[in-house]
Image 1 (cartoon, rainbow, N blue to C red):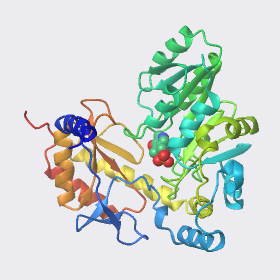
Image 2: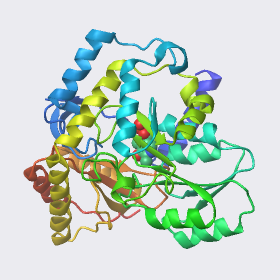
Image 3: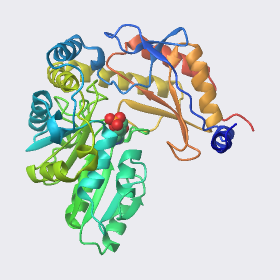
Image 4: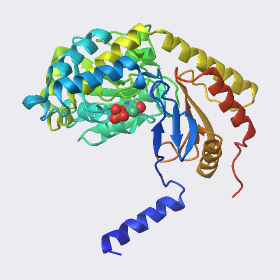
Length: 395
Ligand SMILES: *Cc1c(COP(=O)(O)O)cnc(C)c1O
């Protein structure tokens, strides 16, 4: 073994002993029209951990838009946006996104991860104070941590904790960054309280709506519009296109000055090749379908109600999440892995989420629901869950 591999193997064995070792499943979609039905390890399964909440990833209109755009534009964009990569499809998507979420402008990034890092490099300056919810997505936390800023994390959704920190801060420029729907817990941030605190303390609020966009709001415009909040109250709105939108990518929306600043300074925007124009074309089609087919949001909401009601009857310890993310906390990672493996044997893909993705002692089965599930998929999952023991394995 080389010296490098020796070091790497030693680290890997530490990860393994902590039961934090991650392996990938190889997944095959059986029929894109029902994207929740997949083949994993030669077994047909129902997928309960995808973020394709509306089932748009296999929608015929979206698929056709993407194929047609490939025929028209080719595959690669060939350059960064600021060179020649910014295609008419990207530009049209930005205009449509901005109109959809009621803001002057929007800017597309390759991924949500990059959009959040782009908030860091594009907006934060040395000496700024940045306040983040402890349970924010890793990419939003990274945005705050990689800069030369005064970074603090407040207790999850705890406005008193945030208020104390804002009050104690002597920084001139203050930013508050929060997920709208927390990705591993499914609970929602108190958006209105956040905006009030930010106003009181002259802080600027950035909201990551990766799990609210497409799902909340009468046409899927997301958490901020659903809460009736304005651009002044939430000046920086970020959402992704790879979850409920079913495609890939992300965007930040806000004032023209915000977008111009990001174009000039956001390193994850400037120094990377633009995504294929066909992806933008697919996202445009998905946006149209998302707005038109509001039954998808209705079916999803009905599924959430059905799941919670039956889970309660079965005595499963759910959290107070009322979104499509329904975690079952099983504390220890070994148990989470065991249950996940048992469910897979029975034809259900449910991810075991362990530290460092979630805090120690809060390993969980992260169940996500989709409009593409049938009622019977949900009933059968609950039946399987009622058969397994969720209490910790004795050491
Ligand atoms: C998934 C997610 C991201 C990252 O988006 P990608 O497009 O997958 O890179 C950012 N924030 C939150 C809250 C997420 O759930």
